[in-house]
Image 1 (cartoon, rainbow, N blue to C red):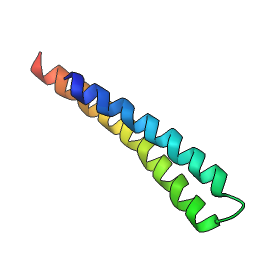
Image 2 (image 1 turned 45 degrees about the horizontal axis):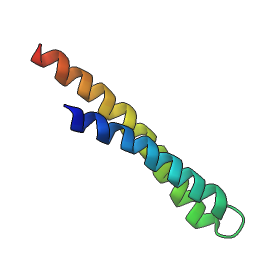
Image 3 (image 1 turned 30 degrees about the vertical axis):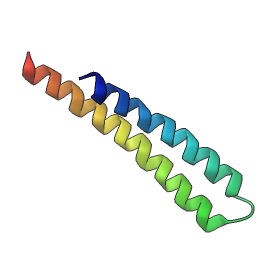
Length: 62
């Protein structure tokens, strides 16, 4: 269970890294910036998806 929680928060770390990368590339390489920002959005989505899945899994085991 702890491993699922660690990976859940790893998605937030990756979202911050991709958002920083996208913002830093914005002026020089728009296509690369869009890709990084898309991956940041995907990482945020995965954080909430995994959080909800983990809660359902814990409730089922009770």
